[in-house]
Image 1: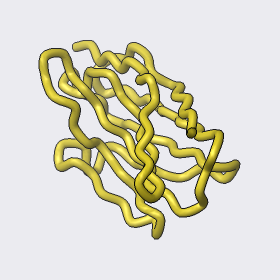
Image 2: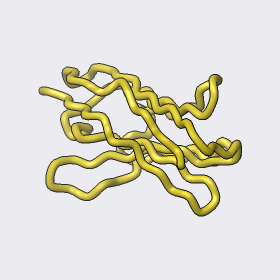
Image 3: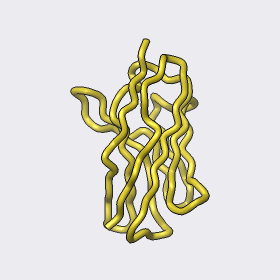
Length: 115
């Protein structure tokens, strides 16, 4: 089992910034894919940014140039730096961890961007 703990969500005005962090613990594999997904009210969960075992990064088109995903230096941790936030970035942000056939999700952290 792998446990994911997210932090850093909150309320911010449009144009502001937030940093999300996710730490993984438990039966961790060094080769893993970690990423962030989000779900807005009434919409399906969508990918925001993913970093693979070779540190190849993929961003959703809507966040490219504004968001940056990175791995932390202390253990299996991933950060999402979000700049120039927009109201349509509002949603619950979920951390995801994949290693082999195992796929785990965090409980989510709320991000709300006001006008």
